[in-house]
Image 1 (spheres, rainbow, N blue to C red):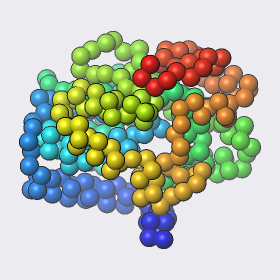
Image 2 (cartoon, rainbow, N blue to C red):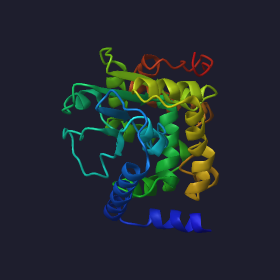
Image 3 (cartoon, one colour):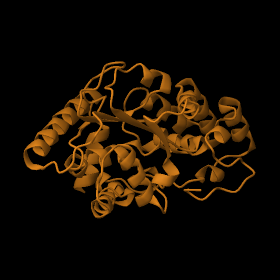
Length: 294
């Protein structure tokens, strides 16, 4: 009951007030970390940047990076671009893990950065992004920006028309273009691409360990296992007070798009994205899904 009440309050609190509360909570957490968490290892990089597009478990990754164990093994404190009211291309203060940056590679390149930094970008099958976006916009996402406008539309039209609306909306918002910009970016030692499907799959521990290692954060495997347990999807879903098909932490299953795309939806998707699926390395419509990590 308490969780549901908190979820209701979250969905009916003005965005500006939510941001102010999050800023206060984040800064209080950072102070507690500085005072009570001993740093046993220092990251060799001054900053770490978590870049992505929406519907790629960004809140989950942010929760991982904000956990005190990351500070313990890196000395880097969490930094939330939106909560700290920074606008691109403002520089991120040194000694921070910036998460989540919803920006294109080109825009990321304009941000002033220290000489020693690491960045990573998390991608997801764009077809699953469409499905996840539909259910999020229609039912579960906290009202902010133009979400209520799209929610009203999606709740008044049939599912198929709603999916077409979401595809058009994501194209207009530049999500597909942003995803393409990172996948097509020149290879560099400073950033690495990770797939959502690998990070939540059966080899999750190995994949998250690779991510942390890329970021110069040497978390021992036992502590990393505990970290993933603390922030498991099932626990986050329970703690959010949401349940059922409208939960913001929905099933997130790779390949779920096959249960929702018909010929017309797929045609509209291809028209909006071109060869993006193949460019990202995902199976074409007539091919079987690859196993995560392949």
